Image 1 (spheres, rainbow, N blue to C red):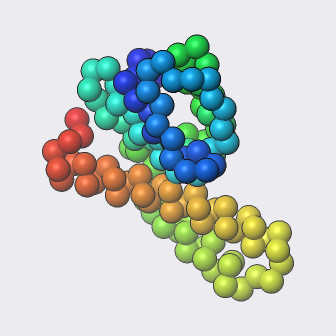
Image 2: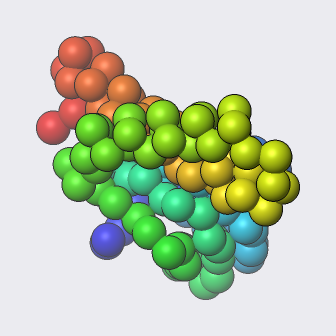
Length: 128
């Protein structure tokens, strides 16, 4: 992605902000958004499905099953996934099925939050 001034990611223990010359770091990621501010002062927002984040030698690596630019997120699919997961959570008594539904709900909510943040940024004139 190039050079960034900052990166904010959904680490397992909460949001983490990575700045230049950050100490080496490894963390599990939860479903959420990754926010970047490039050295050109551009603000970018991505959805990440979870995975791992590594900071080493002034480089940041994200290993994830899925990472989408905000313009790649399909709102209708995210809304449908949210509704389906909520329905499974209401109706299923099987723990393993409920666990998968909880994860799918977290992913859908994270995608919808990314879209909301992009819309708010556009309204405030902060997004290029």
